[in-house]
Image (tube, rainbow, N blue to C red):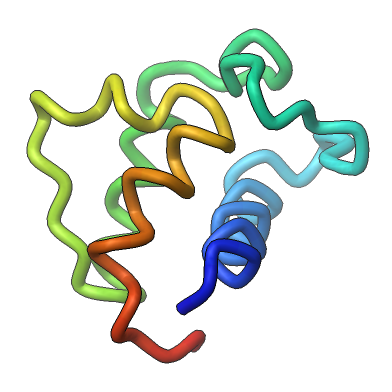
Length: 86
């Protein structure tokens, strides 16, 4: 998967988790929790969806890597490079 495809995956998951949020103006380098009404359970839902859809395991110690869209794509790129978009 390319970084652009990974970003699409994250946006798709965010749409499912926070359907009332406007994702069109999402900034790449600002923490998602500052831009969206996400609580810790929503964040865990993101991690669980990545596991369910793509079998990507993210250790709890690495959750900090998923704070911004930019850091999330960077972190997931090597883990998802050989996967096909669902």
